[in-house]
Length: 288
Image (cartoon, rainbow, N blue to C red; front, side, top):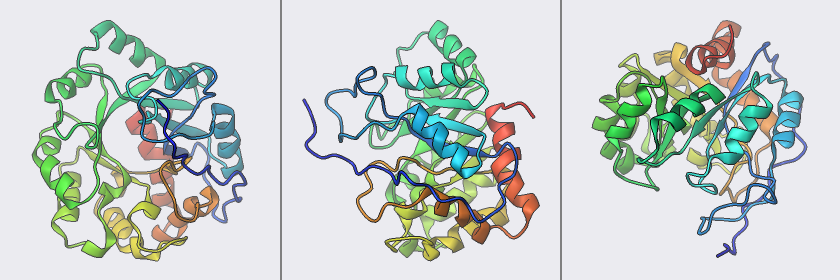
């Protein structure tokens, strides 16, 4: 079975960022597709896509001045993590991984993935509205964090209690994916701030295009949300490109422009270095 919709490709010509990117900077959220001749997508799947390979990713990182990154499992692969694990094996110093595994996974496989550089498990509301709390507890034993992906106010409210009850650290994707029209005082965004206040929650400053009502950078209506998060807990924020921006049908953002959004959101170089270097080093276990 093959989807008839093909998600648009990323901008293959990344701009050099205007900002000064610190050494050891990390992109904490992106995906790798293929090569599909070796790592075919699952059937059924939500969409088709052209190959966006590890070689493409490394070239992008070099163009942006980034040295580290976190590969996040994509729905195109379901719980087949072979492509992601291949990336970790080929770039062990550069990369860490967040996988998607099933509840029947054995301890030996979890141990092997940990040794390969896996640091987290992604829970997607679309995949399952119910968080598998037993799996959350099991991955915690291996030092992994749960990474929560939801969309909109209803979903973050539905997951509030389970997220707050997560053992140890946990991560929330794409600024909680709370629509800008709801405002920073909305119940959904308040849940995000409540999670940050636990001291165990990390939030990705990613997906600005996905929550904005604007069609192109600088997505100025997302600035109050990013600023509110930065003011609340700069020591537990991460930046992610979301490359290659799957399931995005409006104007394709250039990843250099997305990195430069941080320059608008952050007031000083020390906070910038904290978000791009210190925080991911701590959370994902990169060498200091």
